[in-house]
Image (cartoon, rainbow, N blue to C red; front, side, top):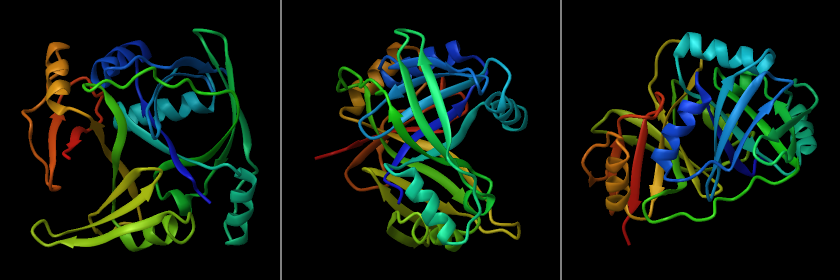
Length: 280
C-alpha cells in the first residue's frame, strides 16, 4: 500500500533564511524552489538518495498557509509533517475505505519551480484523524514532472536519511496502523531496559521510522521528534560544518555498534538533527 517515505516537511518563518541554513547543513544546493499558489505557500526542496526534504513557509492566503501559520504559532519552527508515497493513490483510498475508514477523494496538487518555470503535479490523499493521531501526514502520488536529483553527494555532504524519530504514547496502536493498515514492515519491537523505554523500527525505502514510546494517560498521540542523516565521512562533514559556522558536537561512538555520530546544534530551525556514519 505505502511504498516510500516520500518527504518530510519543516515549517519555517523565512524561506530564504532557512534555505541558507540547510545549504550549510546538507552541503548541497536545493533542487527546487517554488510555490503552491492555491495553498498560499512557498517551498524549497533538497533531494536525497531515499527521500526529499521540504522547507515550507506561508507566503499567501490558503489552506497551506493557515496550516503553517498555526504550526508556527503553536510550536514555532520545526518538523511539521511526514508524507508517505505510493504509485497507486486510488488503490490506497479504496483499500482504506474497505478497512472501514472514511476519507475524501484524492485531490490534485501543482507546483512551479522559480528557477526554470518547470511544473510538477501530484495527487494527495489526506488521512482521517484515527490514522494520523495528531501527526500531520498524508499520502502522495507524483503524476507529472520530475524532481531533479542532486548532481553529486560528496564525502562531507548528507546523502540520505538514516532514520526519522517519532514519539508515541501508544506503540501497540501505532503498530496496528503502520504494519496492519499501511503494510509497512515492522523490523524491531524491543524494550530497552536501561532506559525503560520501548522502541519500534519500521523499514521503508531504505529508511527507518524509529518509534519511541512514552506512555501516559492521554488519548493516542504521535509526534515528530528528530532526524538522523547518513554521511560517507563524518570527519569531513564535521570539518565542513565547522568551516560554515555551524555548531556541531564532537564526534563520538554511536549507540549502534560500528557507528560514529555528531549532533548539529545550530541552523536546524528547531529540528533535532544527528549525523551518522556507518563504519565498514
